[in-house]
Length: 312
Image (cartoon, rainbow, N blue to C red):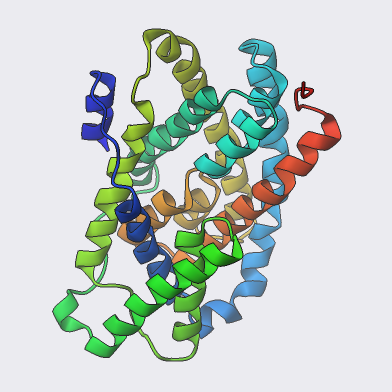
């Protein structure tokens, strides 16, 4: 991530890895799905108490973020609105552009959000929570049954393509997640993808973050990236408050609560949850609910409050 960012800021043009990066995300989907076991299903009533905080969290973030970008940085209404929404990077760019927002600004805002969070979250986990980022990410491929490896590969590819055909958001993660969860609940797989596959996934997800800064100008760094960085601090305060509420009422352990409310992408947070040894099912459930609510709700609310620019 750091290397691709440096190259982009120095005027280089790293182009990412295209479909290979998307395939890397399918591995993460399988890793999450394989963590959904009957025990996780039995704990859903307890998870629901914490998940119920997510809509309130999103509402507060949306109001504060829109006011911040609109009043302080003078963004136009659609750009301010979709900059404030902590959804998926690509989704917010697409929705914002359709509403008349500035896609370049939206790309930099959300790329910065993910970049800053992925950079500081490990520091907070180790410094504030005493977590250790050395949890085994998976067993070596040679230690896993060959038939389970085949089933995981089938779940990754078929889940991805079926979800893509159905038009599901985050198809490369959500499709394999559902397929692997069904295999896990059916007792056909009993572990995550091998360590080698998780490392492959980490590499391509990290490299892809810095690519969004290709062609960035000094003016954009001064105005847009700095605005996004300050917004991340605002998000961090709100997330910390809700994580504290979840912890205080016994809804979650501190590390899980922190990861559940950190507003980064599903892929990046899932990787952190794996290396810190957190309850992956608990963490990912919160982020799936957050992303779903933002993707379904953001365009509807945008129309209701009329943040879209009138079309010619």
